[in-house]
Image 1: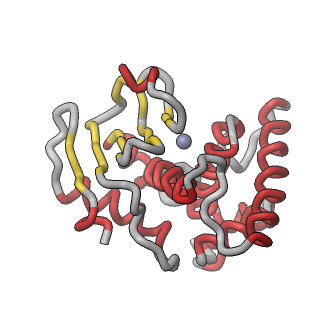
Image 2: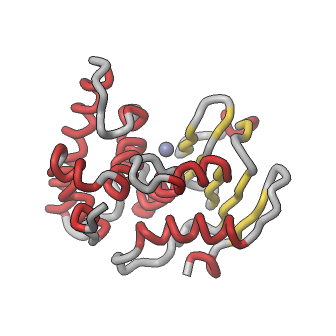
Length: 208
Ligand SMILES: [Zn+2]
């Protein structure tokens, strides 16, 4: 499983311990619960800082990087980095309320799923061409709708952070899928259906 296959490493003074490993692994495993797949095969390390860290040289890294936050990052991952970097404060905040639609671990690991197919376009590896087509339609429309709503200053179910690009939109939609499933199913049924098929889970039926 994830705990055994990946290297967990503390940084910036954080001493790695079971609480940190387990909190991260348990949330990340949720994404793979019913998918017949390796545990994030491209990923080798999970690096954890005590709190928001400064990007430094990351800012100049080329392409395929996703970072959350401005000056102080709460997390990031990168296509060729083979690592996910997380701020423990933000991991804990995300885990504290499983129904608020915000979860850093789900977000960063969704980015990892996005580039399992080698491209960083907000579309993970799907089973069939037909599924890819309906995914592209639903997510394309969903992203446009979020952008319009964010521009209009409306309160949105999906974090407006996802309006940046398709990759962030998929990561944000994943957070919402697991944490505000019933609302997503009701308000964005096409997105919900694509995510339900991909993750092979139906969290709207779990009750809250
Ligand atoms: Zn992101």
